[in-house]
Length: 140
Image (cartoon, rainbow, N blue to C red):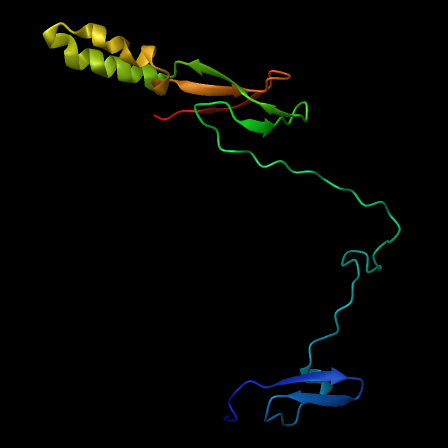
């Protein structure tokens, strides 16, 4: 080991315990200040004997086109969601695009395809217990 390598010293009372090889001319001023638990704002020790507050955090699950089991943040029950399929802006844009492509060959009726299949719609999830809106999912 060379003299340029980092060496560590730990102060215990008045003696130095060496953890390394070459510790030379180290004083107590080279050591970091002692760590104590105090309130940095008021410089008071922490208050003990107060009640401990427990908080439950629910992690939102990934929504799908099908119902999922989840914990409702409104009624706090674990339920299977109710799914309602609704037309979205993307559904209407897709129907308009299909209509625009098929107008020249008189097959505009194909523009109804996005309205007929749930794949092209947005799935809104609701709590089956209290009907609270939980979120939506769209494949588009």
